Image 1 (cartoon, rainbow, N blue to C red):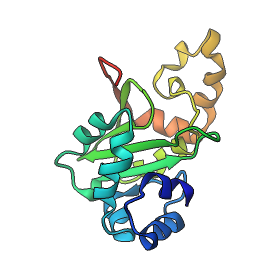
Image 2 (image 1 turned 135 degrees about the vertical axis):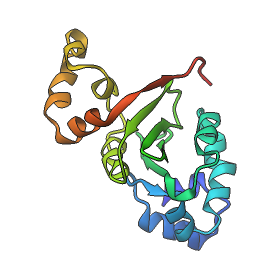
Image 3 (image 1 turned 135 degrees about the horizontal axis):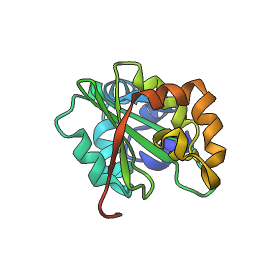
Length: 176
């Protein structure tokens, strides 16, 4: 409830309460579902939370022309005093783009798949400090200082599934 209130201050109290009840940290919901829970969510998100995110321009570009049913948003609370991690997942046909909006990340992660992808991505959202190298690097490159990532990349079902659907990264030229 604190996260929703802090980042969506223009939503009414009832809308914030509905979001706090149904949109828990680690859960990815479509903008369609978020708007149904809290009418005015999309506008409030764009004007406040998204506008304050370092990757707001990338997020706006990813959402452009995409139905609210194909845009998903999830967040994970961070350590005390730190900004929450805010993830945007967007589908265009069978191609998915995942962007960490809230931190100075330099890549958009690309996946292939169907309607199961939001549920899989929820696993990543619940692990906000997770190293994405275990997601995109081939197993043979997970050596040396990256060797701690090899076992999860090879053995965790969630990570194996996401790795099998990984289609690439779009590295951004400049940090914002």
